[in-house]
Image (cartoon, rainbow, N blue to C red; front, side, top):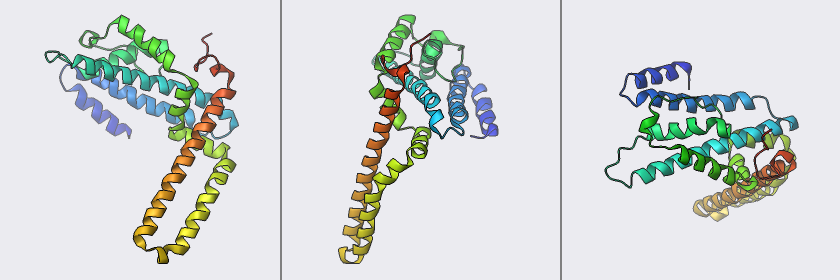
Length: 230
């Protein structure tokens, strides 16, 4: 998003009703995280990039877990038909309340209308404990393996592994191309689609394996998934 678009969105939200002051903070928080990802991954395409990218992956995992818990909190509030639920305040309350405790990237240090969130300190403590428990190597690996910046890194550092994986699929595709006229269009397209699905699944499995191996090689993650605090 261009700076002019960001400014226009902020001005529009600031001109709105009460909740929009915190909505601006939530929007800026999301944009800040996107900017941080770009800044912290720029040019990191060799083996020395692994440690900072793993750290970034863990921070983004925790951010996603915070948002998941906030969404669940909103769903519980809505079970009461008389409840007034402000989604912005709930999400921001969890982000602000857990930013320092969980080293969340790009979060504001305060909010304007915390009392409208219906999020207690007890719920924040419980959320932190749940996220720490969830931060296993398996969960971190599944999260990071799906992120574009990490996939780009793995393809650069492990290009041989991806070439080896893709070679038989390329050969099978060539064979299908040679049979295209005899197979007929429908059968040909079905087989190409099936081959593409199979290749995508194999690639996801490779991405996940390489990601898990990266976390397992880094001693910071051996205890429970997240580095020990000093």
